Amino acid sequence: MPKINDTSIYLSVVIPVYNEELTLRKLAKRLFPVLDSLKKPYEVIFTNDGSVDDSWLILKSLQVEYEGKITLVDFNANYGQHMAIMAGFSHVKGKVVMTMDADLQNPPEEIPAMLKKMDEGYDLVGGYRANRHENDHIVRRYCSKLMNIIRSKVTNIQMRDQGCMLRAYSRAIVDMITQTVETSTFIPALAFKLAARPTEIEVKHEARSEGTSNYSIYELIRVTLDLFTGFSLVPLHIFSIGGGIISFLSVILCGYLMLRRLIIGPEADGMFTLFAILFFLMGICITGIGIVGEYVGRTYQAVCRRPRYLIREVLDHTHERQES
Ligand code: UDP
Ligand code: MG
Image (cartoon, rainbow, N blue to C red; front, top):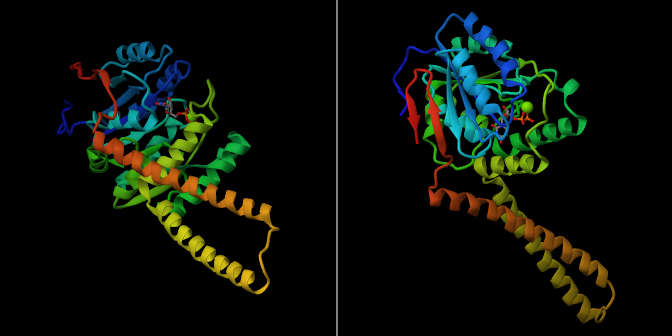
C-alpha cells in the first residue's frame, strides 16, 4: 500500500496514458524542467491504461532516466482515463495533486501558475482552455460547448470547461475522491462537488501533435450520460414530470374525442396523425426507459462491488515493488 502520511513530497502529477508512445518522451522533456524549476520535492505518476503500443516500455525507460521521480501503475486492461487517474490518485504522496493529459494538449508550462493559485488558499484550481477555438475541430468545439451548457444546468456544476484535465487538487479532495465507490465517475465534477474553495484559471491548449484523440463519439456520449446520471437526478425528474403532463393532456384529448363522438358522431380520419402522435409518445417512453436503465445500471454496478480496475504492477519511485 502507498505511504499515505509521507508529507515530504509537495506535488504529485498524475498522468493517464493510453497508446501515447509518440508523445511520452516529448512530454517528459517539457514536464521535468518545469517541475525542477519549482525547487520543491515532486513525483510524477503515470498510469498505463492498458496501452497496446510501446507506451509501457517507454514509461519504464523514462523511470530509469528520471530516477526517483516517476511512479508507474500498470493496468491489466483499458479502464478509461478517469479510472487511470483514480488509480494514480490512490498512489499519490504529495500535498498538492495535479492531473494532466499525456498528449501534450495541456502545456506543462502552465503548472506553476496553477500551483500559485493553490498557494493562495484555493483547494481546487481548474483550467479552462483559452485558445481551444483555434485548434479543435469545429464540430467538436460546438458539441463540447453545448455539453457544457446542458451539464451546468442539469448537474448544477459551474465549470467553464470540464474537458480540460489540467487541474490542481488539494490532497484532502483527492483522498475523498479515492474513497468513493462509484464504478464510473467524472473526476473534475466529483472534485468540484467536494471542493470548499474552487477557482479556475485560463490555460493554453494545444492541438494534438501526434496520434488521434482516444475518444470516439460513442465514448463521448457515454461520458456525458455518466456525468448526468452520476451527478444529477434531473433526467429522472424531467421524465416523471413530463410523463405526468403528457398523461394529463391525453386525458383532456380523450374527453374531447368522447364529446365529439356524442355530438358530431364517430371520426375515421386522422389516422396518420394518430400514428405520428403514437410514435412520438413511444419515442419518449423508450428514451425514458433508457434513462431509468442508466440509473439501474449504475446501481447494479455499485451493488456488484467489483473492483473498478485491476492493477498488474506498481513500480514506485522509491523502488518498492508492489504487485497485486
Ligand atoms: N486516456 C486513457 N485511457 C483511455 C483514453 C485516454 O488513459 O481510455 C488518456 C490519454 O492517454 C490522454 C488522456 O487520457 O493522456 C486524454 O485522452 P485523449 O487525448 O484521447 O482525449 P481528448 O484530449 O480528446 O479529450
Ligand atoms: Mg487529448
